[in-house]
Image (tube, rainbow, N blue to C red):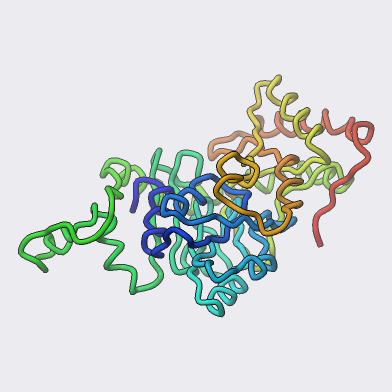
Amino acid sequence: MTPSCTAALEMAAILCEVGPGDEVILPSYTFVSTANAFVLRGAKPVFVDIRPDTLNLNEELIEPAITDRTKVICPVHYAGVGCEMDRIMEIADRHGLLVVEDAAQGVNAFYRERALGSIGHLGAYSFHETKNYICGEGGALCINDEKLVKRAEIIRDKGTNRQQFFRGAVDKYTWVDIGSSYVPSEISSAFLCGQLEMLESISARRREIFESYATQLAPLASEGLLRGPVIPAECKTNYHMYYVLLPDQETRDALMTHLRELGIMAVFHYIPLHSSPVGKELGRCEGDLPVTDDLSGRLLRLPFYHDMTSDEQAKVVDAIITLCGDLPRKSSRTIHAPG
């Protein structure tokens, strides 16, 4: 357990022994913590484009981005849908690289029946208030390589061997490595414990909300006026969010404004890191990122929470239908599901 997913990622970067001159491959379409964890160690983030279906790191673009300085691949499981981990792990194994899964949105989601966060060498979870299972702020580091367990315990406890002291393995504890205070509060952990006891019921309710959105918006999707999330057959999602892709940014922004005027909070997601001031300064792109640039400007996240009522959801859907009735006159572009 850690105080946040950010802390878990920072621990992962230390465990991977990332340092100045190293490179880490990751998507640009992610939260800043994914890159920050490695930048803090002096590494350069190398941004790779995403897939148009899942919005996950495009596994076919990873290998061209690898150089003799590459040390880590950091896939991000967007919206609780797994990246193509078999292919990513095969690339990493062949090039001698470590894989850190950013599974902040992926708790209780699976790829080929394997839990997200448990496939790479390390995996990071989030229990932030915006996630499925929450404790305000909280996270966890999944350590899937036994060789990293002992050092992780030391890094987590300020670089000391205090846990060995508590177990009676040493007669006193001291400073033995770098580290920080990566231990969460007991109160947060107790709150989270109650959430995890409800894991299946929370997941079932989120699935109901997700499928209700998909069903009610299906007529608009069939007309090519919007597109919802795509879940590959090999993935079991945790229904973290429901987003729609609109024909263009103008339409997305108009819908967002329309919903807010009705008291409905719908938001876009990440500003791509490669277009940010620090991303431009400290990172590099592997070629152009046309899918990232395109989809980030057209995506809108719809209201989605455990105790959302049918009436509240109907209000959201009705507002979307009202505005989308004008879409053919606003834009000639239509949206179709990939594949």
